[in-house]
Image (cartoon, rainbow, N blue to C red; front, side, top):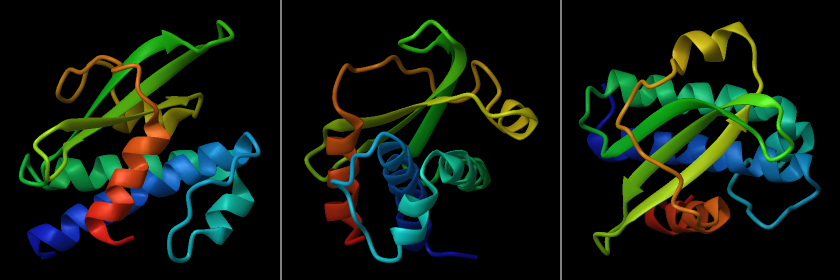
Length: 141
């Protein structure tokens, strides 16, 4: 079994890789961690696999990781039906940070990221990229 810190680091890594993939799909390349170029090259195609990996790790940690997620059905900024997955964590400063993603993925994400599952959170209207920069700093990614 992974130590608590390495489990947290692995969850953080998947959340950041999801953001890298999402950003690359939009032509944004501001975040970079070790071995992330393949994810960036795949863009949107890699995003959901890393979202699912983070959710699985959080679920398997039984609340011990310090990471939480919540999923809700909501239209995206263009009115398309989607799911929003929110990840939240506390920084060393005691503040809560959030990273959120729209997902249009099929069956697997529907099964894993069930609507209204997880610790209920609402969008904090902050930039997910900045929260990912905090994860990179916290876990030396």
